[in-house]
Image 1: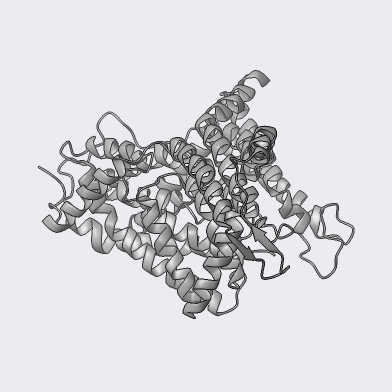
Image 2: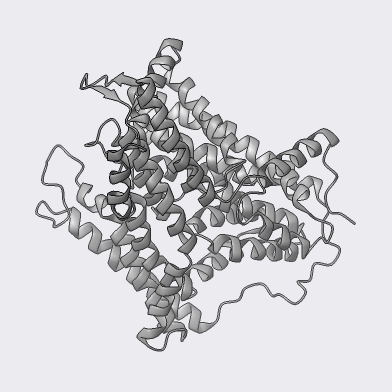
Length: 503
C-alpha cells in the first residue's frame, strides 16, 4: 500500500509536465557551450547594429564588440586559459574541498550528522533532522548520502513514517542549502561569481565570501523552525505510521568508546583553533586584524576564510581518522584529498565553459549594455527595491526548476542581474541572497536536481510504490512556504537596514 495519498489530478498533471519539460534540457555544460555560441552571434549582430549604452557612473559610452572580428577571435584564443584560471569560483572551491574532503573521507562529517540526528528528543525530532540537513551543506553530498537514509531509520524506530524522516532531511539538506551556521564552499562559489559579475560595472567592488553570513546564520534557525512545522503539521499527517517499527538489516547509529575518544580530541582541537583565530584578530597588533580602525576588524581573516576552513577541516579530519584507525599513515588522508578533488571533475568542466561565457559577456560589452538598458527600463517602472528583489527571487525559483546546478545558474544570471540591480541601488550581496532563496526553495521539487533520483531510491526502500511524483508531492509544501516566508524575511531584514554580512 502506498504510504501517501495521491496528489490531486491537476497538481499531478502540472508536475508531470514540469518533469517532461525539464528532462528535455541538455547537460549544463552543453548549455554553456550553446550560450557561448549565442554570444558569438549576438555580439556580431550587436556591433553591426551599433548597440551602445552610456555608463551611469563614468559617463563613458560602451559599444558592443564582435567576437567574430579579427580582434575578437585573437582575444578568445589568447585568453581561453586565463579566463578559466582566473575565474574566481575555481580556486576558492578547490582549496576548500582539499580540507572538506579529508573531513568527509575520515568519517568525521558523517559521524557528526549521525550524532546530531540520533540525539534528538522525540518531540524535537523533526527540528533536529532539518537542522542537521542544513548544516550538512558544508560537506557537499554528506547530507544526501548519509543523513537522508539515516533520518528514515530514526523516524521508523520512533514509530513514525520513514517518508516523513526523508522529507524533513531533504528539506534541510536541499531546501536549506543557502542557510548555515558556518561558511562553506557554496559561499565561496557564489561570491566568486558575483565578484566576476560586478567587474562589468564596478571592477573595484568585490563580494566577500562572508557577504551573506549574518542572514544565512539567522536563516538556519528560520529553516529549522519552518521546516519542522511543515513536517509536523502538513506532511506527516498525510502519511501512515509503519506497522513494523524494527529497522530491517540497517541499524540505528551507535557510538563506540573509540569514536567518543576521537570526538573529544576533535572538540579539543576545535576549541584551540577558535582561540587561534581570536588571537589573530582581537589584539590591536593581531596578524589578521584590519589596520584601518574604521573598517571591519576581521576583514583580512574573512578575505582568507576559505583557507582557514580548509585548514580546520583537514586537521580535524586527520585527528579523527588517526584516532579511529581509519588512517594509518599520511598516504591515507592524502588519498582522501585526491578523492575529493577527483569528485569535482564535472564541476571543473562546467566552470571552464562558464568562465568563457562570463568573460565573453564582459569583453563584448553585452553584459554592461544589457545591464544599463535593463536598469533604465526598470527604473522607468518606478518599482521599489523590495519589489525588484522579490521579483528576482521568483525568477530564480522558476529557472531553478529547469537548471539544476546552483553554480551554473548563477554563472548565467549574475552577469546580467548583478550589474542591473546594482545600477538601481541594490548591492550585490542582496541580489546574491535573493538568488539563493529562490534557488534553495525550489531545489526540492525539481527532478533535475542531481540527487532527486537518489532520494526517490531511498524512499523506495520503505515504500516500493513511491516515485518522483510521490517525492514532489511531499516536498511541495516545504517549497512554497520556504519561498514565501523566506522572501518576507529578507524583505523585512533589508527594510530594517540590517547588513546581510560583514562589509
